[in-house]
Every structure is written in structure tokens, then in C-alpha cells.
Image 1 (cartoon, one colour):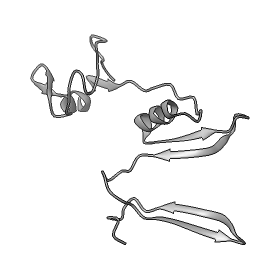
Image 2 (image 1 turned 180 degrees about the vertical axis):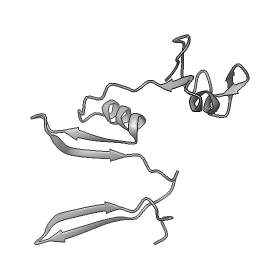
Image 3 (image 1 turned 90 degrees about the vertical axis):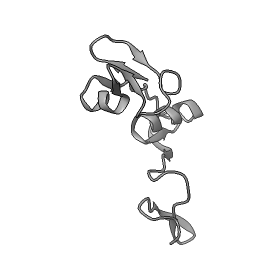
Amino acid sequence: MYKDTLTATTYKYGADFKNFNDILFEGKSVNDLMEEGRLTKILYEETGEFSHSAVTKGILNKGYVQCKFLEGFDGMAIAVSVTNGDGEVPVFVEFKDGRMVKLWIDFESDGRT
């Protein structure tokens, strides 16, 4: 969802426009309107809960979300959006004494390393 900062009209991706290069109004594309500050992204309220809806909202807001344990502290899970489109990215895990101690994802790789 995006909001026109002058009129408070909201526009929904997929309904009001299908591509950020689509002309939305005044002969300008969604990208142009966002660049000039006329359109702003409406952020979803994040709860940190471990649900499909909550994870999706966090990813749409900032590209990742950290879910909370039932007791309310972070660390239950983390979900991220792949930054380089569809495909594979290498994931590495380091174990120590049979326990996972490190996990890292190489988003800059083309997935063939």
C-alpha cells in the first residue's frame, strides 16, 4: 500500500498498479512519484509473532523479520527476502561439539559457488 502525501489517497500494488513503472497519475510512474516524495509506502504494524501474516508484513516492510518466543523475546526465527531475485543462494553452517554455532547466507553470490 502506498499513500499520496497530498491527497491521502491510497494505492495498492497489484490492484491500482501492476508495475512500479506504470503511470499512476499526472503522467508520472509510481517510481517517479516515490522518488519525488509524493507517494510513500504505508508500513504494516509488526507484531514479531510467529505466523505467516506477521512474517509477510515484516518482509514487506524492511526485507526481514525476527519472530519472538512466546515469552516475548526475539530469536524464535528470522525470515528474510532474497535480495537478488529468484534462485539459489549459498547457506553455510558451522558446528562445534555437535551444536550449530554459526549460520550465514551469501546474498552476493550467484548461487553457483
